[in-house]
Image (cartoon, rainbow, N blue to C red; front, side, top):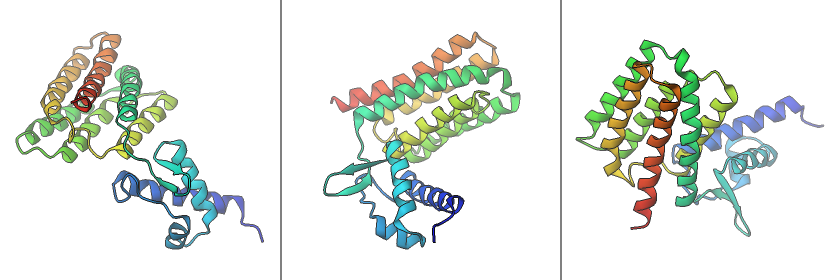
Length: 220
């Protein structure tokens, strides 16, 4: 008896969510082998939805296949990480610019409060905490983007980065204070209703400076 399509799709989705969550929260670290039969048994499903879920994760760059080894969580690739961050700078700059007519005073206050937390955390620096707050800050100012396709691409970029590495600032801690100052500048420009193109480029350059710091660190 064949399994109804909707039931199979929901099993595939549930499996995808389960694996993805464990990759993003680092329970499954880079290089971790994803054994189809083990995951299927854990979730009480056949290997079919597991295989479908892993294919989707491979398309997103979170999983890779290696001959004679099978599926494993993608290994950190510095060049790929920097490329992702550069692309995200372009996308997020555009998403922030499109969000401008829809950003509320409450959004800006919330973003400022997050950035104040980030500044306070510099004294007892924990990269993972700082990285989480950093994402929260950026999401607050681009989440009003009315272009759903662009929003999806920005979200995918953030997820790809967190899948590749749990914290950017573990590798370039010296970048953190500059990042906080640049956030203040972005908020100042938005409050001053500066030209949208200027805001877009400021957000882009903000991301690109972090990418540059990572590249320079990698060459040391």
